[in-house]
Image (cartoon, rainbow, N blue to C red; front, side, top):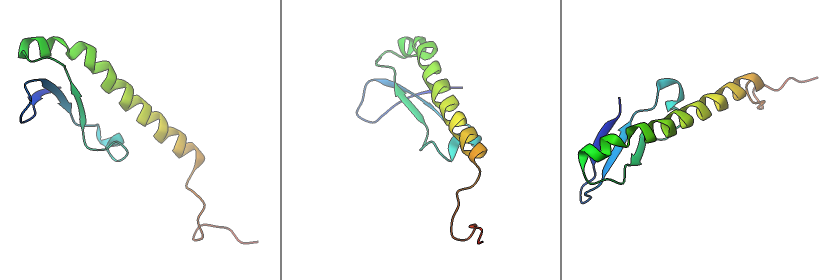
Length: 83
């Protein structure tokens, strides 16, 4: 569920939502996006427009994690195999 809030000193509403736990380690903080609206009802009307941006960022992060897991762990001095 998206949360509408206002920053101190701003009349515009913004949308906030925490990242899912599986991608929170690679996405900083939480999802924040301005609705560009000063009226709360109008800001709520922007949620269907803003929700796909959140979904895209989550999917992009999940794709990045999946690609990294396919490559395996990075080779370091501790994991390097000697001949």
